[in-house]
Length: 66
Image 1: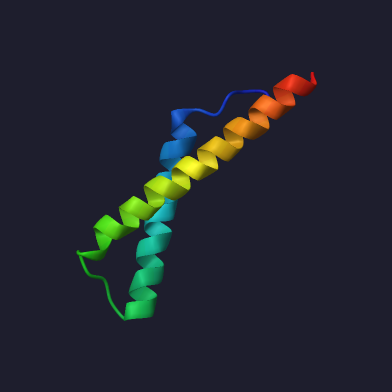
Image 2: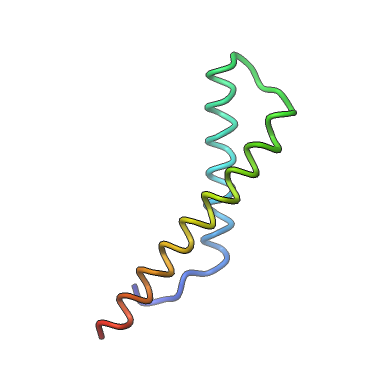
């Protein structure tokens, strides 16, 4: 990796994980409920942070090898 992971990457994954979580919840429960949004966002914040930290680790590892 040449560039350090940005906050844009984190925000992109948070939005993607939120949408995926809400879609899967709607499919499994047969409909969309507004009370599921908070849980979807909480999970997406965690998953987006883990994804961003993994990208940061890969960037740091690639930077150390040079």
